Length: 191
Image 1: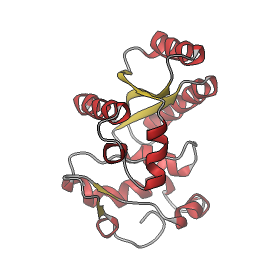
Image 2 (image 1 turned 45 degrees about the vertical axis):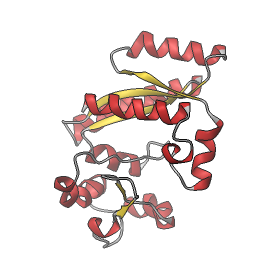
Image 3 (image 1 turned 90 degrees about the vertical axis):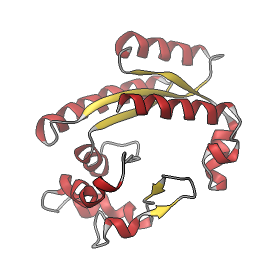
């Protein structure tokens, strides 16, 4: 869809969860960054591809790679808001600063409606002083954008993708599923 002639609607796959469809990636996305480099209006490709689907869904969530390349730029140009999942590590704080500068630049150059929807702390372990310190730094500088929900570090959350299941199915009554459900409710309120 991003680099091929595939229609966006043809790439949508039902998940078995009511009201939730996905548009999965495949191996060809690995070369998309390279192919986009020489494309005209390369930062607008995803936005144009998703346009026919906008009226079909209440919300479209785009999961991005943890990099600031053309795939992420395309996602930012196509989006109204950004949710930043934040690991409680110092390198993540540095990455957050770079990402926020990129969001500001994308907003200025390509997408004036782009906003930071929120920052979601993930893989949090309250027993680690590092987690507590990074969380405190986030609260100090981004308290208005920080989700009140915190996603705990959990073996079950880490295992679920290996079984091809979301945490809500893999361990639906666990702490991880409850935290992600609460984060989803909080996100919905912010939209």
